[in-house]
Length: 116
Image (cartoon, rainbow, N blue to C red):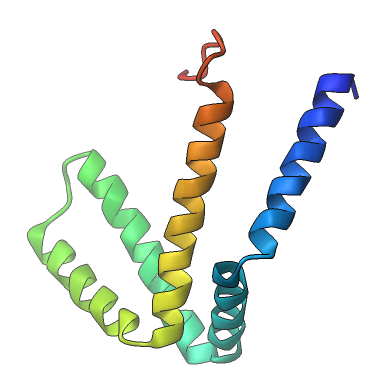
């Protein structure tokens, strides 16, 4: 690896350690553990995520229906009533947004076509 790659990789590892040392990450890991131990809850969550992903693709190609959206909203509400699912889902979103911001910031001043 060249010097820039080594330096960037080390910075990424530092970011990973920063995240791991937060209360949010510890709460996320505990919620994830509880969810995985409850096979029924884990199955429901995976099914919801799969159906939601399919719905997003259907929206993109114009085939999504209001009934699908309503059903998913109801299922999401039921899942989110579980504190561990709530912590897991909200933390996942927060980590994803934060990492997207970090990536966007790291390439914002570069003149590299990244949008293909």
